[in-house]
Amino acid sequence: MTISESLLKVDNIHLTFGGLKAIDGVSLEVRNDELVSLIGPNGAGKTSTINCICKFYDIDSGQIFFHGENITRLKPHQVARRRISRSFQNLDLFKGMTVLENVKLGAHINVRSGILADLLYYGKSRKEEKELEEYIVEEIFSLFGLAKYRNKHVGSLPYGLQKKIDIARALAARPMLLILDEPVAGMNSDETKEITEDIQKIREANISILLIEHDMDLVMNISDRIYVINFGENIADGTSQEVTANPDVIEIYLGKSFEN
Ligand SMILES: Nc1ncnc2c1ncn2[C@@H]1O[C@H](COP(=O)(O)OP(=O)(O)O)[C@@H](O)[C@H]1O
Ligand SMILES: [Mg+2]
Image (tube, rainbow, N blue to C red):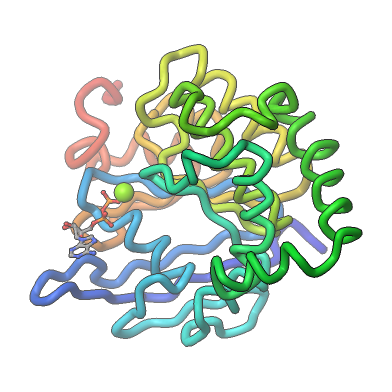
C-alpha cells in the first residue's frame, strides 16, 4: 500500500435535523497511514460528520467510501465490521464494569449488533475470550499503561484515565481507521501530553486517524493534514502551515493569536 491510497472518502454529505442544516456539503479524505484533523467552532458539524461516517445518522445526500467501497447505506455494525472505530466526545463507558470488561466489549460491540449479541457471545467460546483478553492486556494495556487498572471499576477512575479507556475500547476492535472525538477535552496538561503520546503510538501501529480536537497545539503538531469546517461547510484544508495562514480560518476559528 502506498501512503497516497485513499482509505476514507466523504463526498459532499448533507444532513438536516428538522429544519436545521447540520452538515451542508462536507467533503474530506483520509489516506492510508495519515492523521487527518477536522476542526471548527462548536456546532460546526464535526461530531455529526463522524456520526454519518459510523452510520449513527443517515445522510440526506452525498456519499461515503471506505477502501473504495461505497458504505453510504450500510448499517452501523456493518461499518464497524469494515474496521472503523471511534471514541466518544461524551464518554460512553459502563461505569459499573471494570476496565477490562469495558475494553472487551469494544471488541464485539463494534462487530456484532448489540449488547444482547455480546452477552450471547460471552458464553460461546472460552478460547476466543481468552485470546481477546490476551490481546487487550498485551497489546493495548501495555501500550497505554493501563494494566494496573484492569480490574478497577471505570466509575472509580479519574476522567483523564476514562478518556484513555474509551480510546483503548475503540482499539479493541482492531481498527484500520480510528476516529477520535475531542480526546483531550477537559484534560490537564499532563493528561494531554500522555494522550498525545498514546496517539503517536497508535500511528506507529499503522492505524489511520481522523481527529477532532480544539487543542490547537495538539492538532498543529500531530496532523498530516487538517480540514476546517464551519456551519456544516468546508472552509479550508491543507497542512498546519497552510491552515494557520488562511485568513478565513483565522477569522472564524483560530483568532488573532495565529496571525503573524
Ligand atoms: N441529534 C441532534 N438533533 C438535533 N440537532 C443536532 C443533533 N446533533 C447535532 N445537532 C446540531 O447540529 C449542529 C452540529 O452539531 P455537532 O455536529 O455536534 O457540532 P460539533 O461537533 O462541530 O460541535 C449543531 O447545530 C447541533 O446543535
Ligand atoms: Mg462535537
